[in-house]
Amino acid sequence: MIRVLLADDHAIVIEGLRALLEGEPDIKVVAWTTDGPDVSSLVEQYKPDVVVLDLELTSIKGTAVIEALHERPAPPKVLVLTAYNDGESLRSALDAGADGLALKTESPQQTLTAIRQVHAGRLVFPQAARRWIEGRAAGAPGDLTPREREVWALVAGGLTNPQIAERLGLSDNTVKFHVQHLFSKLGVKNRTEAALKYAHGR
Image (cartoon, rainbow, N blue to C red; front, side):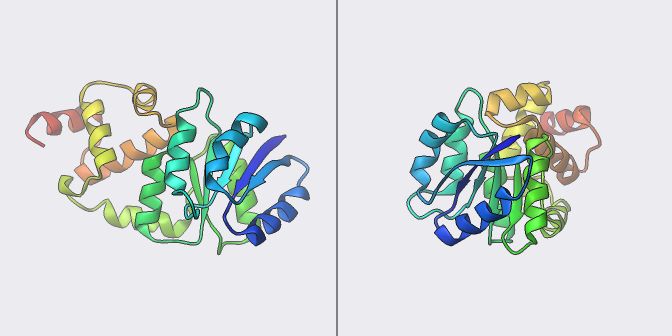
């Protein structure tokens, strides 16, 4: 049974999600809130497996909620459910440590699939988001985000993905995602090439 917590500042979205999820035999909605700052205490109380979170919460940024959850000893998986299909929203969710992203404009069935995939440890992104990332991948090292630069330095230092994940408080999948895109942005095939490029003045 996948235990889910819903956080969205629109009560109507929460009602719709609850109605959708309550029909599923393998998913149980254990709590919900329209107030971002309540998420951490509800996670403490109900121990959900997956938090379905809107990035645009009224009193606190969704990214701040994700970062706070990642500081917990056993953080839940976080699926960001957003209406914004632009690259910067995606990037901010990823950098904060989200395990997946689903769009409110997609079919309810895709939201269900995303919850199950994130729970199973897969990193989930909609096609449009992938296209945006791949478009960005053609850039030069100057296009790296601060998070990618951090990851690059740790790769160059010989750390494995699980070690980088632990150091940065991210999931293994999120680190794997950053490393893949780092390699394509740098035009390198492996960690050794990435480390050499880092050593030669970046």
